[in-house]
Each structure stands twice: as C-alpha cells, then as structure tokens.
Length: 323
Image 1: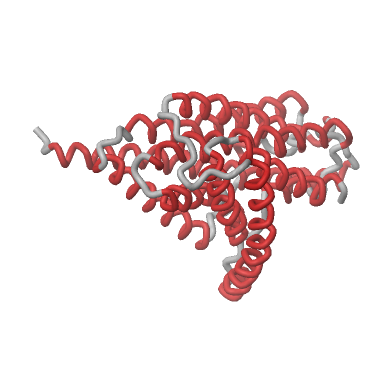
Image 2: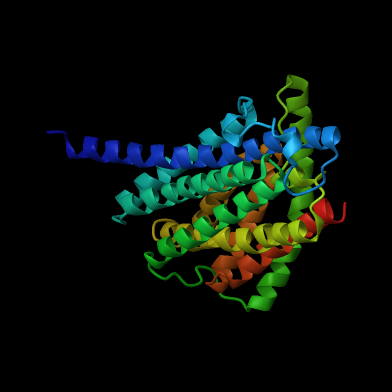
C-alpha cells in the first residue's frame, strides 16, 4: 500500500491536472473565438453579410471544432506555468493547515471545464442552425459559459464558510471610489509594462496580444447583438467571475493565508484565467488586486461586482459598440 504522503501527492497532482485542463480549455476557447471570427470577417467581405449569423451562401465556413489553432505563445506558456505552480503551492498550504482542499479544487477546475464545454456546444448549435459561424454564435457561447460559471460558482460559494472583511472595514461607497482611483492609476502603469513586453516579444517574433473584445471589433452586431454583448460581458461575466474568484476562491484562501496573501493569490489566479490576452494579461492582474482589496474591505461581493461591471461596460461600449 502506498505511503500516506505518496497518496496525498497523487491526489494533489490529480486535482492540479483537472484545474490545468480547465484553464487550458478556457484559454483555447477564447483563441478559437478569435480564429473563427477571422474566418467570418473574410466571408463578410466575400458575400456582404452583416447579420449575426452568416447567410446560407457562406456554409463553407468550418464548424468551430474543425478550426485549426496556432500553438500558444511563449509568454502565455510561462504565465500559465507560474499559475500552475501557485495553485500547487496553495493546495499543499491548505492541506498543511488542515483545511479540506480536494473537493474545492476539483469543483473549481471542473467549473471551467463544464463552462467551456457549454460554450462550445452553444456555438456549435448556432453554427449548425444558421449554416455558418457568425458573432451570434460567439455571443450565445459567452452567455452559456457565463450562466454555467455563475451557477456552479454559487454552489461552490455556498459550500465555503462565510468570510467577512479581512482588512479594516470601510463603507462601500468609499471602497468603490478608492478602488476606481487605484484602478485608473494602476491600469495605465500596467499598459506601460504591456507595451514594454510587447516590444520585447516583437523583437523575438513571439507577440501575442489582444482581448476577447477584439473578436467583435469589426462585427456589425445591431441593436440585439449589442444588447446581448452588454448582457454577457457587462452583467453576466462580472457576476460569474466575482462569485468564483472573490467569492468561493477568496473564502477558501482566507482560511489558509494572510489577508494580502489571499488578495495577491486570488489576483494571480484571476490573471491566469486571462492568459489568452497575451502581454495584456497585466491588466487583469492589476484589476484582480483592486477587486480583491475591495472584497477584503467590504466583506461582500457587491462592490467588486459593481467595479467589474463598470470597467467591462466601458470597454465594450468604447471598443465595440461605438466603434
């Protein structure tokens, strides 16, 4: 029979493998969005379609599961490896502190696996129904993914002990205002870092930048498409991500780490889920710290969700709807 430490190590590696698969599948899904929409833009130029779903004359566009993907960049691979190392360390820290961790990490990693599968199914159904892969299918995939993340995130959060403020409590209005200030100061500095990294990777020929917003930058969404994009990106996504990261994950980490350790670790894992941004991942990392600070000061999710929704809505309106 295996030694107890060996069994614990095998269990930890199994949980980490599941979490790794979830993060990789999640990042692959966003890369697929960019690739598939690039094919749609070519079809729009060819057939003149501006609808959310392509016309039947563009049926030559391949099903999303058949789109070939480029290999991940070196930058994304390095960030991903760092995040995996952090997750492994947190798992062992929880076990050393006597905090049950197996069920949580299985649920956390499995949530992203199931959410990504739901998004793929929704996009595939839209592709089959409309005879082509248009932005409507991508939007339905985002909604499906957000609903699964939100629902399973609530279940994970309900299984965690309630954790109030872990820093000196402050009024919600003050925390919101200060967080906005910190974000507006920190994000431009993060952009400078991103530009520096961009220059370095350009020199090496390994550049990967961009965000999911870029997938819709040239799409003609119309009123319905714009409303659906705002709902998915500025309502559903902030709620789901905050429930998962500043809710379930934050509550779990607060039991095994210091207040700032909890804030920084949750921010690092939040950034890891945005490795598909390439060098632009520094933005989510900064926002992860700000949102974690807001959660630590208020003891709830209302302010982090409001902050997240504010920035997502501003990005979508400026980057897509008003373009």
